[in-house]
Image 1 (cartoon, one colour):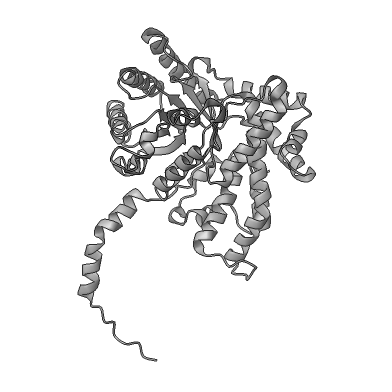
Image 2: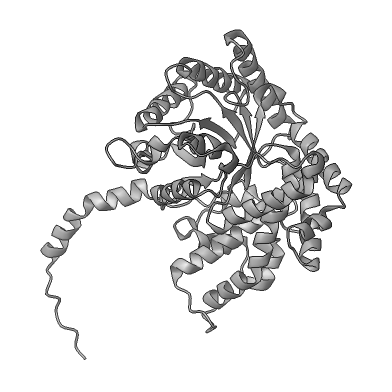
Length: 434
């Protein structure tokens, strides 16, 4: 059958292209999608002056000792509801994790965890923190991601926060090349203007220290209701990615500041309170497609004293809950939370691997199965499996055996726009291929 001439002319198509040029630019600039790099499964907060080059290893040793004192990691798996084979597989990987990389992301805290100790003390601590981080990176003992949280940009603490940020970044720059995993955290954000001010501050630091434009990205902590719903009835958090495109790396939910701001009684402040879920759903909508990552907050119920096992069960359940809702990162505040963090996280990926890998294999090999997945679903399946590999929950050889794809192909399926670039896979943790 002969194909008729199209009714729309070249001039018509050109006019439509012209009408949509702004849309094309917006999608290209503001919605690049996830870059496929490794996202840490947690952020550990510690008062800035407590960091030493051996800090991560010390926490790992404490976590292992606590697990051993309470029957071992397999028993922890049973406490979290894992059946025998799963608990054994998870325990072996968690033990390796706590030995080789117990902290994935560490934040030296100059805000709530540090307090107001006077300018002289904080100046000295900021300089010492830069030196200690540089030393740890040089020695190979620093976590893959590391940085500081400084004081917020509200009027009473603005100058102090900027000075600490300046001293820390300037100290790192003077010591040599900035760490690849450097992360800066801006807390208690209320308005878009505060984020624009942070954009200006880091831009100036880049100029002063001859850093590439955009090198200093930062996280925004969502801890105030004004960032979710502004005075005009709009959502400022949804404006952030577009006010400073490419500058924000993540949004982190602050459980207790946010809950307290809404007058939630202390007894009921929780990561799973309805006000928390609402805020986090708005955050998800705000950054969808932008490449900005999300992190849940923390629980202040710590596994210590007579409350270890109950606290582990609570923490494990909350970690799993976050993962199921698309929040792949959270905060940890104590070494006793590391075993339950990794046990719950690893079980999530290992339990989901067989079904995800089977569907991915069917998609790749164009085999008919019980589920006919579209490209968008295939991307989600591949991203799930890739996250499992990157955090150490599953091995590359397991993925190859079950899904029939190696890591470069897996990343290409998860992030088609970046299929030609496989450099981010170098962030795979030790032991992930075993």
